[in-house]
Each structure stands twice: as C-alpha cells, then as structure tokens.
Image (cartoon, rainbow, N blue to C red; front, top):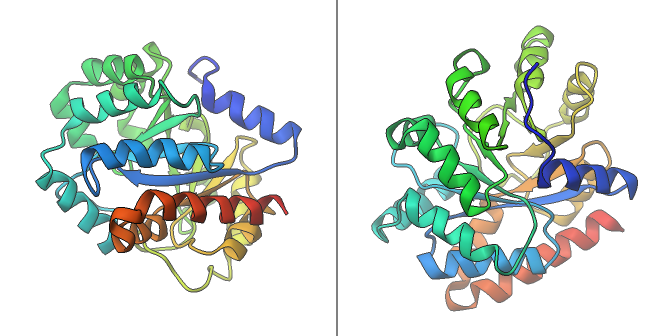
Length: 268
C-alpha cells in the first residue's frame, strides 16, 4: 500500500481522536459569491471552529453536486475564477490559518492542468489533500503517484450502495480520511438523515480503521451531533452555500455564526 507522509489531515484526526472529538468540515466554493469573499469565508469558518475546509474548484458539468453547489459553481465561473486563482487563495489563507485545506474537484480539471503541475502547485499553495468524486481507485494510480510525491492525500468516496469488497478497495486507496456519502443521490440539504446511515458507517468500519467523514444532506446542528457520535468527521456543504447565497453582504457573519452553532452542538 502506498501512502503520503503525515500531513495536517493526519495530525488533525490524531489530535481529535485523543480528545474524543469529531471534525467539522465545511465545504466552500472558491470564487463564490465572489473571489475575495470566498477567501474571507475560508478564514472566517476556520476562526468559527471548523477543523478542516473543503475548497471546491468550480466545474461546469459536475456529477456529484446538486442544484445548490451547481448554482454556486456557475456564479464562480462567471467571476472568472480558475485553478491558479484557487491555489493563490489557499496560499493567501495560509497567512491566517493552519487548518487542513482539501481541494474538491473533478478529474478533468486535474488532467487538463497536468497531474504533476497540479500536485506541485497545490502543495506549494498549502493544500493538504484532494477529493476527486469521478476518479475510481482503479484509475487513480497516475494521479496518486503525483500526489504522493508532493505529500497530498487523495480522499476516496464510499457509497452506501457499495459491496463490502468495493468498500475495502476504496478505503485501502483513500488517504487522510474516507468520504462516506450518506445517501444515494447528489449533494443538497435534507430534512432527515437516512435511516440506514449508522449501518452503513459500521459496514465501512469493519473494513478500515481510517477516519470516516460523512457528507451529503447534513444541514442542522442536531444532525451534525448525531453523525459525530458514529463518525470521525461531519461535512456540511449545500446548507452553508445556501446560507451564503441568502445572506449576501452579511454572509461572512452568518457563516461564522452557523459554523459556531454546529461545532457547539457536536462538542456538547
């Protein structure tokens, strides 16, 4: 098995496990609602208690993202953001925060940019890992070779529809943590968590001891608290992006308040 050396993600989960805590991992779209505000949001959620930030590179034809993230991506693209600007934002954020930053993007973005160049520039900016939803373990070797060279974790996604054999393959290839998709479908806030979520997490636990983070559909403090009792990380994306869209000029203040409340619920 090939692995990256210890980075901020590994150190985070080691520390949280020792403290019996769960990571709060909000998702932000780079360039949304505008380029500078997305930078300020990254810093703001870190200050509010986020343990790791997923920073999305907007993509015109996403596979895993629902209407909320799609709309944010379209707006970010109209703001003329690109991969180099995203890396520059992370580099600037590093002047204010040291929490892990994980890029979420699709493989075509990495492929067109160049695997070696993407890994080198991401690591140079201070990125700690990359989530690529449309990159299966069987096709990931060229990218993982470049990522490992620059100590970038490649986070794989596990789905509730996966067989135990498939879960074993996905978790063996995943570094940093395993992204457990809570439901079948695309991203988006849901009123209720899936009834079989705990069973799914327990299935993944039976094939790996790596940290498990749950995403898709989480929006409320009580949901985050419920997941924090069975997993190592809680990922909140669409609910936060919705809040940013709805609060306009007050989005940074609103995002900080929301993340603080979620974190307080998880730690209570």
